[in-house]
Image 1 (cartoon, rainbow, N blue to C red):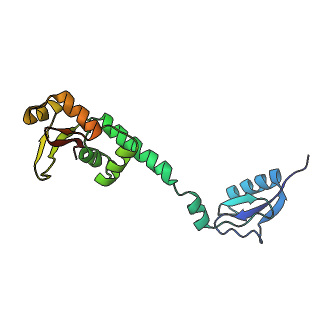
Image 2 (cartoon, one colour):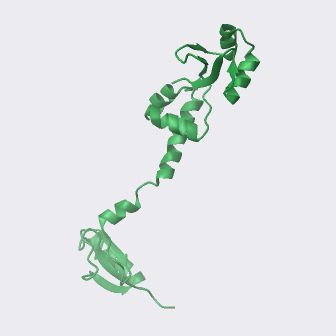
Image 3 (cartoon, one colour):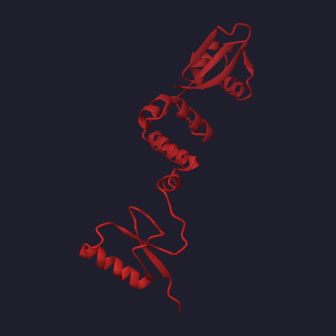
Length: 172
């Protein structure tokens, strides 16, 4: 069994070319503990193998940056928690999580989180300025004079009912 040679260096000012001590790992560990506790080395020390490349703070901090996908997963978890706390609109989710409406809308669409608080919209075929809205499909059906079933079916296929394009719109 061969013992690994290590260098004892100052952790605050890493200089591998000028180590504080060189020797086998178990002895250097004991030496570092003793000298640190006795106050001979009033700074933190690190054991490294010879030939180790020196490190710098910029590289270390870059290695700690969060993966964008991981950040997005954390964001959608926060949105789902807020959703389970009875926030069912984009605006209420944004307020609860602290994200912008655009971020919440993007993540809700990307992860197919269903917003229950939608409204139904009917836009006139030949006059797009004429719009009729309703909180429920039944209410919109009453306003248009059409059965709710045909309105719901038209919303899936962007079809026409009584001369109106039907769509569901998420409440903001």
